[in-house]
Length: 485
Image 1 (cartoon, rainbow, N blue to C red):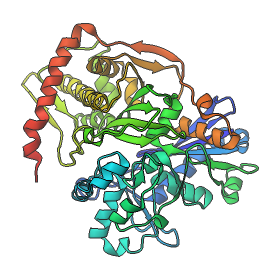
Image 2 (image 1 turned 60 degrees about the horizontal axis):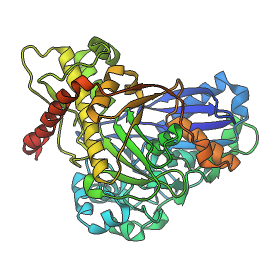
Image 3 (image 1 turned 180 degrees about the vertical axis):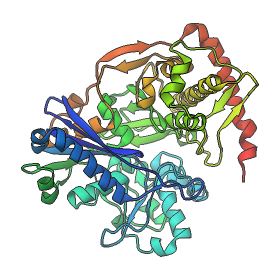
Image 4 (image 1 turned 90 degrees about the horizontal axis):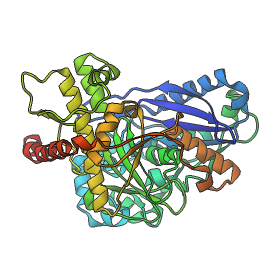
């Protein structure tokens, strides 16, 4: 048996698979986000441990014999978080999360140093790890002075699981400290933020062994024998392993808290000015590109909170047949935007409201706004040398057929639905645990799921969507000056 642990923003998911990759069961532990100031987003790493314990306890209650047979563990996690530890591995402050935008001044200053884009292949985004450390150095110098280790969220879990300070390429590529082409830490970039390689975890590939489960935990969980822990992956690369998106040209769209358009690459294809991420993949000698929007289902959840209706109730009101866009345009920039704008201060907007703009019209505009933001990502990927012929949809938002029809029509490509099953980050992490434990061929393990169905672009609405997308594109430059501080 093989265990995948996915540390998300809203919870930890534990998934158990057997040697044939059949899912035996899964369980969850919940997490909350602390937002002490506008633009801030933090979590206490102790809560990650608690949520992992909850998730594994859920698996043990349902599948004790199967859990006892675990031989490999894979880790996946939310990327970019700055988890700061002292020399005794004590947490120095709450982890600053991926969607925290406080360090936009520091990010801009680092991004102005041409070495960062040249070596990492990426813009230095405020959500990345390096500018967060620059912010801590400036605003919390007494904490910065005590930093012995900087770990990404899933790698803090690894430390708890194994006692090892280790990471892997896909997650580390989102720090702004990795030489992405050479797949190693850059001492030059670390020095630019007053850090050095001794404060970074040891790097391995995501398919390699990166520690062994501590005997104390194995005993507590009822696991017999030695258990290896794989390098694992950042959440998007782990989802790609779960979806089999590991060969050049394969792509998926993820509608989670954030939205991701992800394409696997056989070589390193950076184009930082497009605000497309060019990262290492979890498999050796592979890379990937992705465009990221900061609010996907988060935008619908915000609308749900404001209206007092659940997300499911709101999308059900629209029916399943795609409608032509109305005069209302929604920009989903509730916490800034990454691709293609790299703008931490922009905020969301409804434009074109009228007396006739009821709740359903606003819901439709929210879904379309996210679809158009993903279209922005497609255009950015194209500018970076990657064209996409079709995508597979994953994430909570993919349960809405209406939304998928909107995305297919906005992108102008078919959207495939995987057959029943859970092929997300926890499954990808479990696959990496299997590979590390058995030495199996990564490409042979990371196969795509069967396609249950395909949602094609609605040809009769293509023109209306093109017009609405042009309108959407015009709004950002119009409201941008209003967001400047």
